[in-house]
Amino acid sequence: MSIKLLDFHSVAKESEFIPQAVIDRPVSFFERMRKMEFIEGHDDLDTYQATALMLNGHQLVALMHYRGHPENTVTVYLPRSSPAEAIPEIVNHLVRELDLPADSVSWQRADGPDL
Image (cartoon, rainbow, N blue to C red; front, side, top):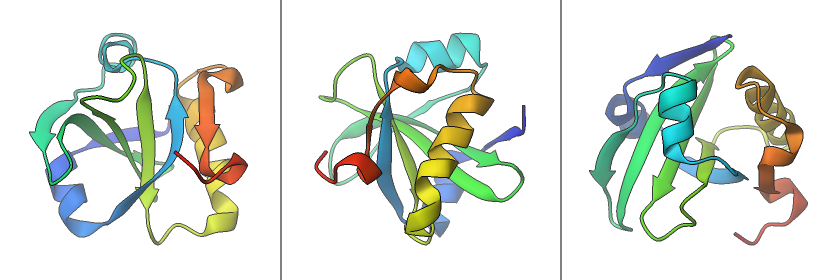
């Protein structure tokens, strides 16, 4: 797997993240099955659980679940600086690296901008 776990707070200070996809798996799945540690925090919107990843040594990714969002989902956030035309492939690559089926992605901004 070409995923490296990062400190979420450090990454969040350096980049502005935009929601790009929703994966139909709960935080507990990523913690238990993929050995990812999610931290709890809060921002201007609400409380959340989050982790940060480096994909392929260069692509920052944040996985987050805000309180009030559907329970069995995490949202994939990418830096605002991510090229729009590359985002679908980044999301697809992340899903493959996490060994998830393609249909685990229930929404992508590329398919419809409304979240």
